[in-house]
Image (cartoon, rainbow, N blue to C red; front, side):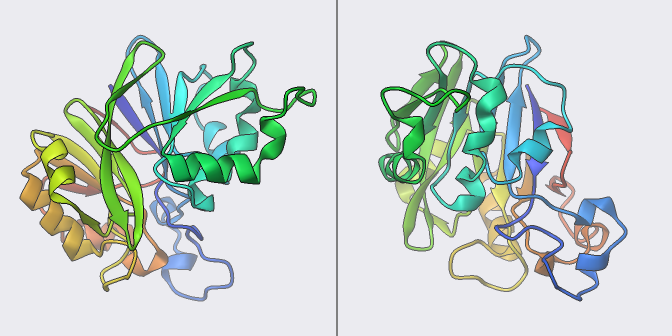
Length: 255
């Protein structure tokens, strides 16, 4: 399976509008970060999207066009759901593109985008099927992708990470329960959030992310969902353990 990091930034992206800091004015393209999202793809051309934020259209222009099997959402915040209307090119089927979210995220999508759920859709709007998933209850996307939702906390907000066999994707996490850790046991590869070096009330810091990676004992880890306060990509990467990597927009790796 190939993983493409479509976006590696936090809710405001990097550079942050109006910020004079050196990172926001870096010439290194790895320091320019769209909102966090990832694309999973198999050798058979099957594709699954994790989160669909407001940069989705721009992100998909950077990859070859192929149909999506579905979209899974970690939580309802706008930087993870704000691109749903731009799914239009991927929803030109009678039964619609399946979207998977927990109950509160699904409720948020219905309330924010009511025109997607009317009996008679306006011509051109995305045709979707919104399906509710439960933490710790596995589900299958299009009779192909086997997915395990992992319960984690985003500050005081319960959200989901996802496991796909040996690989897991967890973002916006501050802590994980014993049940979540149990569901992650045996994972060999993980993408996980690390906002900045300083502590933050709703996201892991870099040191917390490294502790989490060490606790899981994974073979390789990729860090994501950075603010400009993480620092320069090249400098931070040079300080990391040899099996831990900073992601950047457009990064591709195989599992």
